[in-house]
Length: 145
Image 1: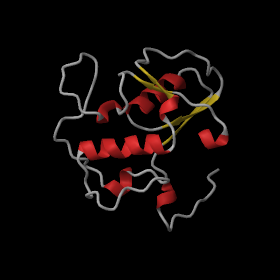
Image 2: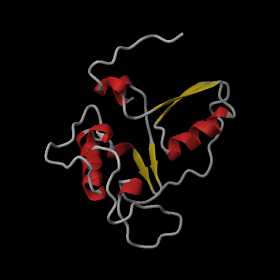
Image 3: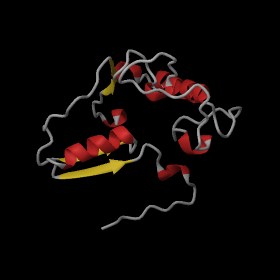
């Protein structure tokens, strides 16, 4: 989105980068975190960003700390941290999108919550997963009508 001149803001409830992927052994009310020994149940090829390949030496199913390092490296490589507003929880959305067409990028829990909230007021809501089909070499794009 940035390369197309669209301004973005990422809201992070905690004061640290990483969201749920940053392990925290403390009991912080209202903050979720990955468990210490979590291993991704999706292979590295499917969780990798299309413009930032996974290091070859990483195992197919990564430990949470290695995946955290990968997303941190991605954010640093593309200078994304300046777009993160830390210590900010989203409690509600305002209806600036009344009768507008909206694209929600990301289909995780947060993206789904945002899309459902927007669907109440927006003219149209489209969702796009962060993982793109461009990774599939033989995929042919067709225009759907």
